[in-house]
Length: 118
Image (cartoon, rainbow, N blue to C red; front, top):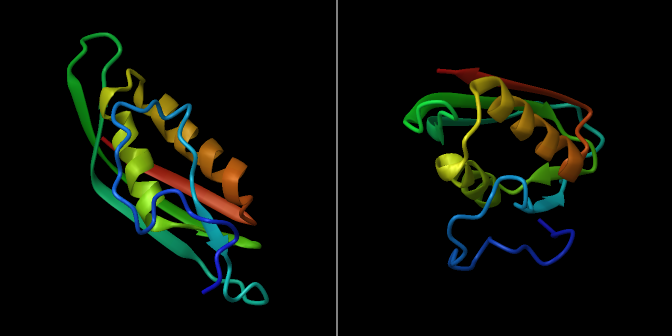
């Protein structure tokens, strides 16, 4: 599969720690089947963020479904993006919407659903 640009994370060791989800840059690659409508699913059963009130960890499961347009999300960068929430203080709804908006910004899917279970 041809890449859109050189990916930042794929094939390299991740060295940046404590990166904010706001600053994280997702990698994308060209959709190998742009003429087809299909659903891509990512699930993360071990999502963690920090409660902004208690400063205690919140644990959840994130499921992302989307119909790609020209680009698809590179899975390693998505996993590292979710890791960036480990030190992020945000309510459940904030984290869920932040994930959806980041994906929309970087790959512009035809359709997206982000589900979170806490």
